[in-house]
Amino acid sequence: MGNKLSAVPDVELTVVPKHVAIIMDGNGRWAKKRFLKRVAGHKAGVDTVKMVIETSAQLGVEVVTFFAFSSENWNRPRDEVSTLMDLFVTSLEKEVAQLHEKNIRLRFIGDRSRFSEKLQKRINEAEKLTCDNQGMQIVIAANYGGKWDITDAVRKIAQQIRKGSLEPEDISEELIQNTISLGDLPEPDFFIRTSGEHRISNFMIWQLAYTELYFTDIFWPDFDRVEYVKALKSFADRERRFGKTGEQVAKLNNA
Ligand code: FPP
Image (cartoon, rainbow, N blue to C red; front, top):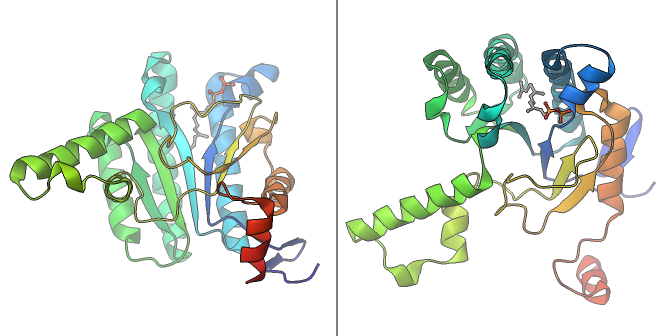
């Protein structure tokens, strides 16, 4: 393959997404299939998170955002919610030093005020420790919802208007973009959802406006490196148009 932008021993891709956003779905069904408790699926899912981080770093992906816990997930059985919270705390305790060593920056989006003090502390520590790292960025969306994100941005803009530092006429797409979560990062150019569900489920609904969507039937714990690379190859094969015609895109690519 000519013009390879990225190469690891067994993978060559002509183009890699800058920002991959992932809904990790199917942990519960994976566990059920094995007659295990649902939480066993979440635990197995942590290994897939690690694989995606490692592979993404090798291939030169700049940002990966994982949807770890939605605003709606509070409605799950109490013991599942609390085991998930424990899993977040222990994963942070175990993995943050290594991520920091690899120059990876860790960020969190979502309303963290409902989390335990301990979890909030771990989140703040992880962000602070890694905030100057210049390598890949990992974003964990926790207690996150896309509608919450837009509402929060609107509230911040309204506060500026009340202060008198902004006029309603100044509200633009660019302003909203800069106010919403991750406005300083490249927008996700690739979205993956596992487990056969074909929905966005209130995940980054503003940021996903032009994103290439990829769905696979594989449950998250079974989503291995081969499957991830398959997804990335599918991204590389797609023609990105942004509303332009194929001819316009070809002209731009040849310019
Ligand atoms: C969806 O599967 C998965 C979740 C709600 C939790 C995802 C969390 C992890 C993989 C834990 C580790 C994450 C980090 C960032 C350390 P589901 O339970 O909805 O599966 P189902 O649809 O089969 O029931």
